[in-house]
Amino acid sequence: MKSLHHIRLAKPRDIEACVALDASNFNIYTSAKRGKHFEEMIPRNAMLVAEDMNRIVAYASFEPDWFGCSFLKLVVVDTSSRRLGLASQLIKHIEDHYCPLGRLFSSTEDDNTPSKAMHEKLGFQESGYLDNLPQPHREIFYYKKLNQK
Image (cartoon, rainbow, N blue to C red; front, side, top):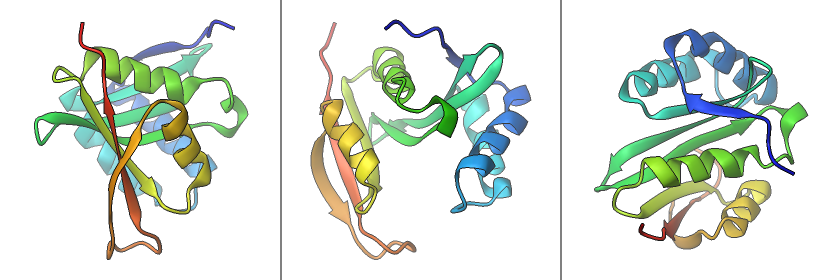
């Protein structure tokens, strides 16, 4: 089924809606911390949102110059809009428009089974891990080599 969601670069006016989406779906981070993240990513054109009937239902942020490659930082989909392919669409948009060297990296905590399954489904391969971060589980890094046009 083709998605009716509109994907676009995030704008400063989207911060409040993204903070609300984040706060309604997670207890891990404070809204203030994510708000600061959004304020940093948006002016750099490094954050996308997905809208459904003018309501933001998902977002993705990325680092466009991470060791010369792109790094997917966050993907969040509202619980009411999950299983519709929004995360895949956001990631595909990043791949198509923001990965000039044809490489996309990402990471997730080792205990995040849904995220690990999504990475595998989208063709990412494990690239390594990092221990001793200020979180309870090791961070698994993923790599995806993209088809060059």
